[in-house]
Image (tube, rainbow, N blue to C red):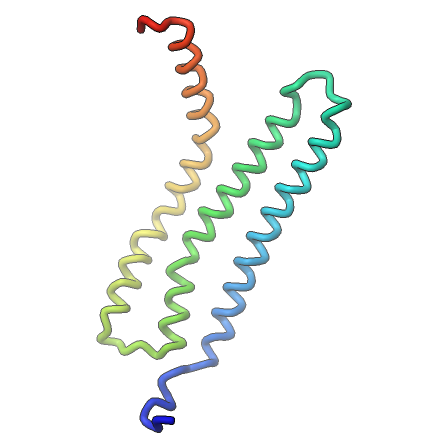
Length: 142
């Protein structure tokens, strides 16, 4: 064991990193599990529906949007996870790591609103795309 390298890791900061990682995993698991439970209940009720597109398509759209919102929010947490890794590894203050970290922070933090907007406008875009394809199928000369 090299005695010069004994103090390069600070394990007290790893507790926060573990809690952040654990909370992200719990949120992701809960979202996926909720999606699967909603999907299974919709499939069980399929025989009792009066129309084919009633609640199944709506609940599926809501579940997918929820997963996309959660994924977008977890993407924003990425720089924080990288920061905790840098703190645990005792990265030197003059290192290139901090420039990359602040660059990621500057990119991902403002993108949270953009990602949420993409998820919000996704169903409207899909409806527009479906209507455009139906219009092209009806009038192939356009």
